[in-house]
Image 1 (spheres, rainbow, N blue to C red):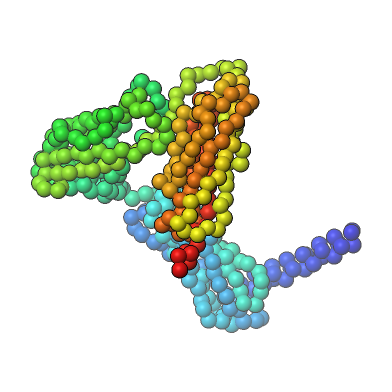
Image 2 (cartoon, rainbow, N blue to C red):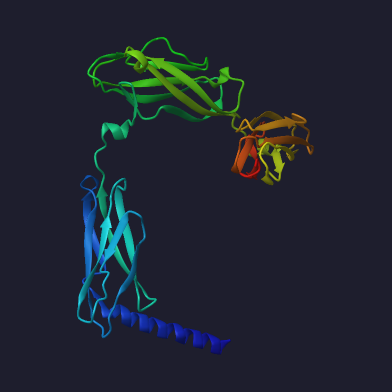
Length: 366
């Protein structure tokens, strides 16, 4: 074993010595370049690393690979004879990359397996954001950040959740928000101000009342606003997203230890390769590993192609129940992965999920 280690070390030493000699034969003006501070708005910057073949043999660059797609390399394609010069060019594109950067170019020679590396670095000063950058969505004469307003996770309490969204009148005329709003009962809308002068900014305030819903999990609601603009420009249809979760008051570690606990045996099931227009069913075992009865509040698939049947909504301490999940493959092709969210009174993990997947053969209907 010692003899093998000595031979291995000797081989590595010889290899490093040979490659190091080849590297020395390619004499660069520098191997590190600092662009310093550059402006994103000025576009790509370029630096050229020049070299001289200081060896006795002709050298040809086989390839130059950048460490990032933001850097574009170029190089001398012809063979470089002894005493002749060549170049390797690095072009860095700072678009959408504000802040510090440190990138490398890996150079491969035809005559050697040695990898030579060159480095560029610098700091990108971000370009000032335009109105289009800040509020990219145009609805009639109004600019907003998104057509959809996302509340994220909301705990179901009696307290409403409020979010504000910026809006800008980009026209040369006054725009007035109508009091007439098509919306669900659990969402209220306020405008500040209700009358937007030309080029004026304002806010749309959404008030979400989760206590008015007997629901948990992901919701997508539609809200339609109307303005004083002409024809179809007066209609502003937006989506409101939220994920509703049960609220549990603060609990001590002892209380959490005594709480119900949902455990799912094998939460992923693979149906394998299926034909289209089939409906297959599997079962998941839901168990209560806690010290109080477990209540299943809701079961929500994320696709209309999934149907469920829960045998028991209440699981006693130490008991279990079965959740039947059926997958209808009609109209579906290729890889499929669907999930079912399970909401319970487990304060440690009130929202859990099971998943089914399959591959639907595209040639099954021939």
